[in-house]
Image (cartoon, rainbow, N blue to C red; front, side):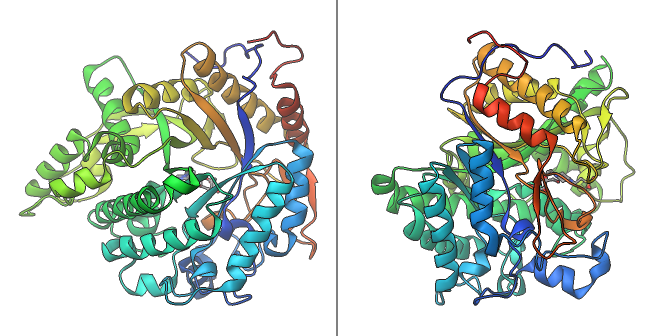
Length: 479
Ligand code: GBH
């Protein structure tokens, strides 16, 4: 199947919530204003600008710290009813620790949340989208299990201050990306290259931190605030490269090392069996006396299991997986996984080298998440396309139309309860190690102008029409 099927002519359900997403470090700027502490991204980009493709940084970014009212006006213009943004931990707690709260930080998010409320736009707030306070990195960052407790204290302060108005919370955005790129390959802050050992420890600590925040919410806030808390997991749909038993198994293993790595502990309890077995075996073969995948104690399994009120899914792309041999003696996540991945030859390429369009993957992955994890409901918390700076971004429209059509089919044809969607991104922003070279916004931002002028792209007009008609084609029939 090529996955480029007909676009659905049915309408999205009335209750379906369309929205857009951003993250603090990528849009806010004001990196050292009004008492904000230093984050690991501030440090990472200032220490060595060559870590970022265009040697730029998020010091100003979209200047949303000052232009938040304009951002809300844009959300209103799009007509969306859901806005996913993140809170900067060091803007609230400059050192990451609860002893010193930065009132200006609280005031900033209070204004944003009030503004959204007045506009009738629901906030979906991420507590951690990668900007760890530097002080906590000095304590070991996501390799130190104590950081889970600090995260709990931070979460409590945020719930207490904003929980009357925020009913949808995501604890951590894409733990896999921060662990793989921040602690594995080193392309993201804090830039550690610990691909064999660090990535698994990082995963465990982030899962414990998520669970800590979830339990604090349940015990101290849920009864009065009545909100929902979950984590955001990024995943690909993985197609076997051939009909061979090896490749079919490779695609399943790929999914377990990708989606299951984080979803299994939370939705089923403990790491996927295939990860436990393969990492243990490789570790012993490579001379370790123990598995480099740190085990959860039975108490930790129980503590993490069930810590969700919905599934937050970031879905951009798919992979074709084949089984592959890696020589013993080169310990890494990839050799533990034992697969090789590529993209389909007929999948459209984006400006980002990892992002190819395979619309059918959306429907297939949603079905996997729904059937395997029984999450009750799913929010697609990110999905989007990278282009150059052009306003005439037909390739983004094609991508969104194909993916959203498959998302709609999952709802209407397969009974998957997808209740909301926040496209990535509301506007162009600081794309981490890619700087400003890749544009993900449905709204263009002029980073050369001190005004950071925002201009709707053609895709934003298209999205605006979708949101108002709930229809992906010229004319729809009722669903
Ligand atoms: C999201 O991650 C992030 O949540 C968001 O902040 C970001 O702006 C957006 O994507 C667009 O990139 O370079 O080959 O090692 C999406 C999932 C996982 C995609 C890590 C890039 C690195 C691939 N990301 N992946 S590679």
